[in-house]
Image (cartoon, rainbow, N blue to C red):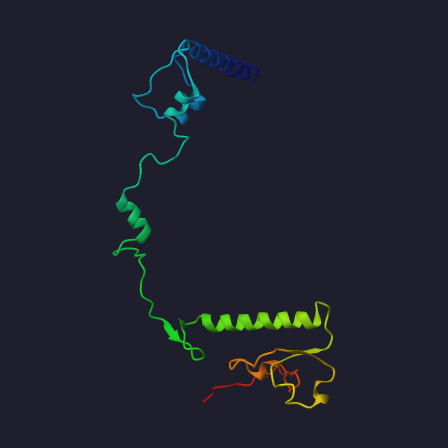
Length: 201
């Protein structure tokens, strides 16, 4: 067992010595550890130890720099941008799933909220939030907050608004903003877990 280890040790020493001699004489350049970074072929020339060697020459034929070597043609660029009619076509296509909103009359895609109605609701909500912040501030509110528009406070008696914090909007209520959205439900919450069947007939 010891003789085998000695033989392997001597073999490694001779291989290292051989590599050092080849590198010194210029017959084995670049070293074998860096041979994967070069393209082996007839265009590779041997460099002697006495000749000057720079980093530019080392990386000139290297495969480390995986960058495009040629510019794409206009045909390939257009295919990548617009596709091909026989395969993947990326050109603009007319939409056939447009609907007319029942509230405002603007067009929108099926399954998507009307952008015009959504914008009106967003603006009205921002006005309500600003009015509530001006009247009540940012402190916690324990009482019920009621947002009223013009002419709605006089429609109820004074005792109806007792114990409530009222925020008045100085404009008429929009036609799409129902009063029922601000009213609490009058039916008590159910504790039953039974589900009634529907659409049996």
